[in-house]
Image (cartoon, rainbow, N blue to C red; front, side, top):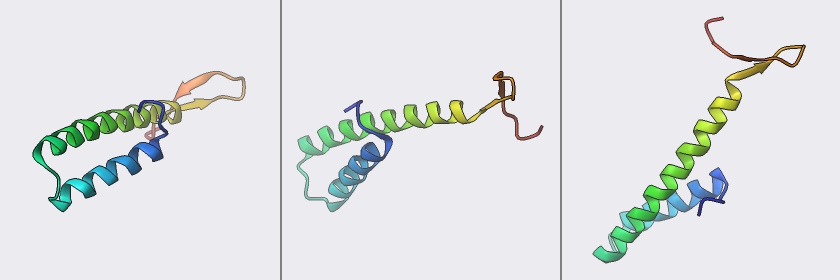
Length: 72
């Protein structure tokens, strides 16, 4: 599951939510689906954090990386 892209993870997460919202899922299956959803949330969060870190860097003309601060 960890090798899924952000978009694939999000799509699978949406499928699980829709399935659980339908109310037609037995309790044991719902618990398994919930655990899968939590793994997908973790994966999405990690991918978003990595993207934020890479976006927060700016490369100067000389190739030096600096932290980006919106207040600058």
